[in-house]
Amino acid sequence: MALFHTHTLSNGLRIAAEIDHRCYSAALGYFVHAGSRNETDGESGLSHFLEHMMFKGTESRSAADVNRELDELGGNSNAYTSEEQTVYYATVLPKFQDRLVELLTDMLSPSLEEHEFQTERKVILEEIAKYEDQPPFGAFERAMEIHFGPRGLGRRVLGTKESIESMEASTMRDYFNRRYRPDNIVVAASGNVDFDGLVEALEKQTKPWSDRSAPPPRNPDDTNSLPVGIDVDPILKVDELAQSYLIQMNRGPSMASEDRFASRILASILGDEGGSRLFWELIDTGRAETATVWPQEFADCGAWFTYLVCEKSDLTLNKKLIQDIMTRTAEQGVTNEELEQAVNKATAACIMQSERPGNRLFSIGSRWLTQSEYISTDEMLENFRSLDQQKIAAAAAEYLTPQPTTEVIVSDGIEGDC
Image 1: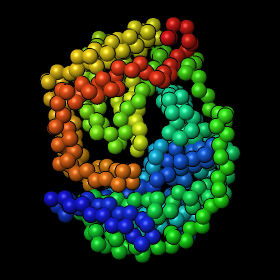
Image 2: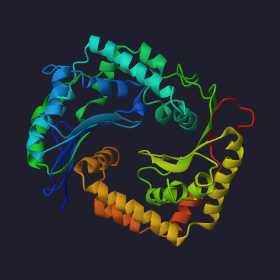
Image 3: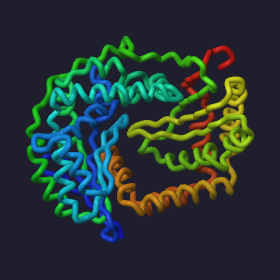
Image 4: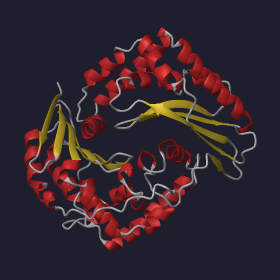
């Protein structure tokens, strides 16, 4: 049976662990409250840039040492940055717990050397260029910028070409000292973990973090103008485009909302890859290549996405078909058969995910970082199994009936797109 333990170190760093000694592996991650919504215009893309720099060496390890030791530990290791957090994680055999803790903790005190900064800047710029050259050509970022505004949740995780080119290493160091403080970080663990050993090691190894110097105040953004490199035109014109891409956004449930589970099930019924209402109406009939919906939850708010890919000539009709399906669902609800099928899919996925400590880690760490809350697998399953048609109908009425507040179209022209 899995047991949940928490502890707060003397420096304010929080530890949250779901321990199950029946597991064959142990997963550990640093969850840092540092994402694109925490940046200013001059820092746009810095959270993600800094994530890269964590692998470029420390006072005691070179970049080659960091990557070699991660390989020596085996298992799986990586990092990612989102709108609200940056996460560094790894899954190893339990016997390597101490080595992993020491390595990840050391990585979170990076050298941030100027030459590594300049080298990695080129990597980030190549990543931005590569992403912007792939369908749907930055449309999701454009939709977020229009829906939430170009700052806060609407700020691009990668930043822009302009923000990365103008960024200085000193700005990164200040941002690091501001966001990478013990009381702004959660260490999450799952699986076959020695919790007492974890607490003892972290108490000792993160003690110097309290001495990180406080950076100077940041210059406020000029909210009367757009950040450099940002455009909020809802039409993205791309030459020689074979298909049209449509992204619609509306409000959705937050991570704290009680109807987030109903919304996930509703999204499955409407837009699952196979057997959903949009699948049978648009995909199976050949009207569209992609037609799906999903909710995206943030700490204090949420969004409801609709995504359509089809021939330009079919865009107007397909938009109407999707809206008709949404309206009909909000007015008539879902069938018991649809609900049962969607719940079975969700609970099966939840159970399979819980079998791997590396999968459970993200749910534990993200939720403790943003909500200071733990939800066990059994509680998660009960949240899905307790749903009924009335709860799904309420979520449908809440999130499907309003017309989309944000719409972005990618096409080779605007005539006939709307």
